[in-house]
Image 1 (cartoon, protein in one colour):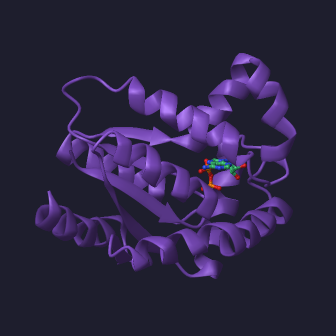
Image 2 (cartoon, rainbow, N blue to C red):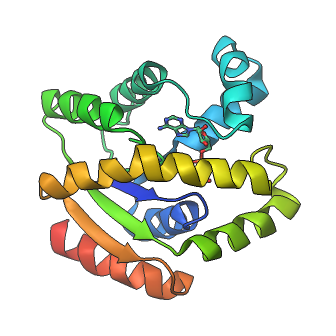
Length: 190
Ligand code: ADP
């Protein structure tokens, strides 16, 4: 199985690159942000608990995320070629729990670190905010999400770097040029 953690700041293009990877490699795609927004829309108990957190640019508690991921992994189709984890793990505690639960299932994942300059991601997110309808795509919440990314999620990259399961991608380029870096890595490791 080819399991990829796509890590990058909000607006770094994780969703866009995931779509291209899915198309070319036939992997499953789990965007935890999309899954959580779906929970909110459905009005579920979990959705009600996390609505305000997400709108404020804060993270959902680790134990809830780990539970959600575990359920997702255990329900993958038997012929699954691999998964793109887009937006998970987002804290070192999530990464540690994820590594344990993957190990128990004889699975592993590599992390691709999609780096984009801060000015550029702010520009992209403000632009997306005009049409996304997302409660968190406004300047104040974008700033908060970027702060959370630096303090909580960047250390996840270092965690995978130390485990020698890390690749850096320069996401400042066009969609195609960014994908071509990812493609080169996936061809090497698949
Ligand atoms: P972005 O990467 O643009 O911030 P996402 O759609 O990945 O957007 O996530 C939106 C929000 O969902 C996050 O700001 C956070 O509140 C919540 N979220 C998503 N994934 C996680 C996670 N793994 N742990 C905690 N919260 C998460």
